[in-house]
Image (cartoon, rainbow, N blue to C red; front, side, top):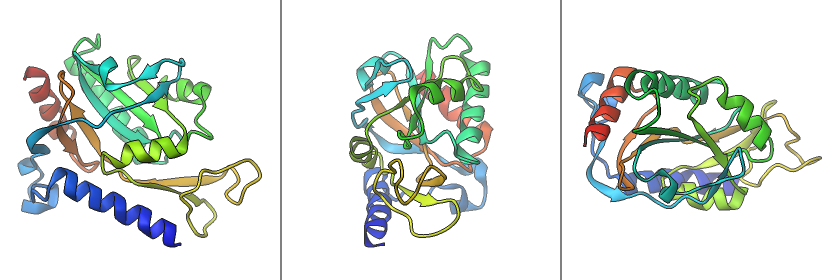
Length: 216
């Protein structure tokens, strides 16, 4: 349990330190229309070293030249992950259906179950240009922490969560949930992190934020 507490607290602290306490979330004013997801100052996006569902590397260098909408989750996520990807896919269809200016990137935090084949099937429900990627658990943990993202594995039937990667025949088996921080990060064409969008944000606010980044 100590490992769980440290992991969650570390992720939350990293989020606050990295992005700053701006007081502009949807609950700050009571009016979601006033929510400003943009950082006070753009920051260099933390590096990525992942592999997509086709075996190709996913790095910031690969994303340069297009705006990236980056989201961390897992394919068996029951709510926020498919909802967010559907939201982003609708926005992509409206703003950039050919994928010339916007790239959606979904990073799985569950590499044990989210194999290349699973990721490929999962993304078929969304915009055809979505990149789905993952990596080894410990490498993922170090990379996503730079974005203020924490995650742990929790048995679906109940019980203590664990930060250790599930393994065949292990305590978690293959029926577990992944508790994770949910944010959509917007990275501009030069690789600068410019905004973090909360999952409860309306599609209109998210669309306006992406338009603003695309328009420069």
